[in-house]
Image (tube, rainbow, N blue to C red; front, side, top):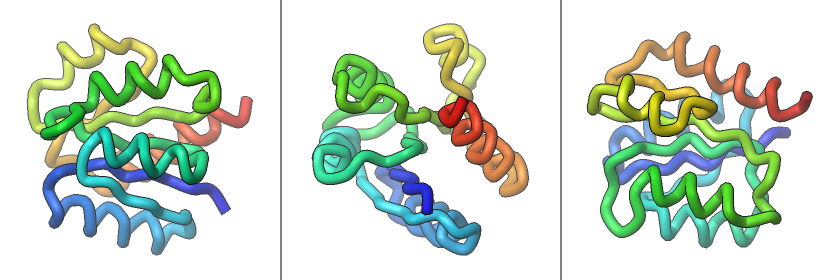
Length: 121
């Protein structure tokens, strides 16, 4: 069973995404900001990190930077989401797919599967 770490400071979104991913058969771990996400990653190595962009304590860009800097986290797939215009985010991290909030559930699941498939290659 693949593990997805969902990171978002909005509790309602966090719970909805976790429920949806569990229904799709994924093991889900949650965090409400980047620092908590790194703590979770130290406990387990998720297959995918689905992270919001704008969060307190440690935001999405900083979280992605820390994940990429840590050799133990190499191979973890990344997927971003944000309520702000994602075109600028795509320029900043062209290799990280981003979803614009609010997003379609089918689009989310497509991106989750695509990110996990690319990790396996």
